[in-house]
Every structure is written in structure tokens, then in C-alpha cells.
Length: 354
Image (tube, rainbow, N blue to C red; front, side, top):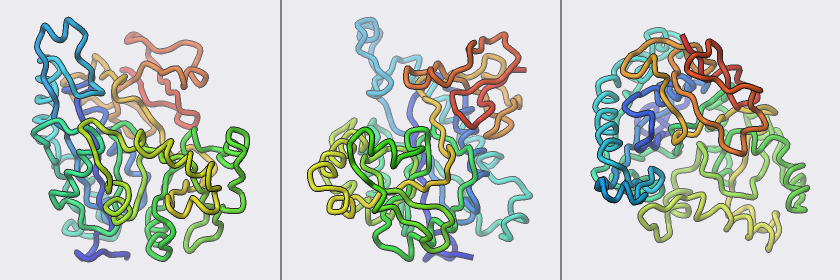
């Protein structure tokens, strides 16, 4: 079995979370952890941390003036209280499934309990924002593995992921700095890029690399979605820049990479960025907006199981954003509906009711 310097871990996963409307419910994170079941050997190969950002609590007067904003970390006293309750509830659940693996996991992974790390929480006392929070975790010494996965609390795996093959291929190829997983934005990516930017990526597609049975397609835009990266790629490049409170890496690097690719050309520019998407030919990563997610009324404060492709206890649904409406069913669910729905193409359900 592949092992890191500490005997088994090759990967550190930092799951970013912060106040969202569904708190104090832990449903969103529970759904995420159940989706990890689709990632081969993730519990053996990875140390997992939930990186909890702080917040700025505003006054009732500021709230009335519209000066709050969850994305900016400025929250009302009510939202702040529910976030504190969420963190307390989360701490109490870390030794239970889905945060702790089921008893059958050790048998299935040929590993005893000692080589499966327990999930830990990193609670930042002040609000940082996404990029500075990531850097804080690095600075505090939590990332000691050769690879790191910066994950979002609302990005779920909906198809199988060959994690050992991805890590082994990255170990064997220094040019492979970051691997993303296919989402609706990156399906047919070579065609989309040629059509939108008149940029031909076909000559740069990597096929039959190492243990991978899937091609690696170079990206032209730096995405902030869940991805696996070399740790030194983050320390020496991604985070090696001035970061202000509230910064997001995709906003700092996304368009910058695109402009670089357009100006210097893909063959010259892409080696600096080194980010690829694993072309499994189907949606692997699904985004359910955390800021739009709401815990189902029947399960707020309870642990009732609900049917879901990413796990039996997922119990959150989201109001669709404009870019997902084309994939919606004709009728969005209400609290009285007894059915399931999702904006994902390949997931038959993310929400269901009892």
C-alpha cells in the first residue's frame, strides 16, 4: 500500500467551512463525508481536517442597513449563534459515522484502526476568508504530507475516484502539479475551450500516464474547486503572494491564468500552472451551493436518514442559481413534496423528504 513519511498518509485534506444558512445542521458536511466513500482508500491515504473560519458579528443596526453578508463573513448575532451551535454539534459527532469510518471500512481497506486517522477540526478565532484561512492552516503546521486537497464543504463526489492512481501518477511526474475532477464546467473541455477562446488544448492532453486509465486535460483557468495538489505547489506558488482578508484563490488566479494562456500560448504558459482535469467522461464533482442550502425542516436538530446518492443521511437542498436552472426538473420541490431532485446531471437525488 502507498505510504507517506508518517507511515501511511500521503495527503492532507482541508475542508473549508464557514457560516451558512443551514446551520446549526451538520447535514451538508455529513453529505460531503458520505460522498468520500466514492474516493478509493481516502481514509487510509489522507489526514482530514475541517477548517472552520471565524466571522465578524455585526450589530442589529448594521443588519438593518444591509451591511451583513455571509460570503464576506459579516453575520448577524442569530447566524453567529447558529454557527457556534453548529461547531459544538460537529465536535460531538466526529467520532461517529460518517465523520468516523464505519466498522466495515477497516476490513474493506485491509487496514487496522491505527492507520485510519480521526477527523480533526481547525477553528480559527477570527475571520480570515478562504485564501488566508488556507494559508493559516499551512502556517500552523497542519499540512505535512507531500500532497494537499483543499476541499469545499459543498462540493460532493458523485462518481468513483481512483485516488491511489492519481497520487502515484503525481509522485512519478513533477509536471503534474494539480488534478481536478470533472464537473459540468469541464465536461467536453477541449471542445469548450476551442469554441470559447480559440485555444487548442489537444496537443497538450496527456494519455496513458502511469497507472491512470483516464486522460489528463490541461486547464486554462485556475478553479477553486476541490482538487489534489502538490504541497510545494501551494507553498511555493499558489500561496506565495500577498493575501488580504477575504481573498479567494480563484478570484486571484483564475483570470490571471487565462490571460497568461492567451498571451503566451498554452504550450508555453501551462507548465507554470500545471493544473489538469482528470477526464473520466462524466460528472465526478457536484457543487451544491452552501449559501443556498437549507436543512429540511423535518431533520433540523435530528438525525433522521434521508435517501441520497451521496449517502443515506444527506438532508439539505438548495435554491438553484441562474447557471443551473437549465438542468432543473419542471417543478422544484417544496417541504410537502415526497420526492427527490438535483441540479446535477448524473445524480438522481440530493434531497428527499420523509
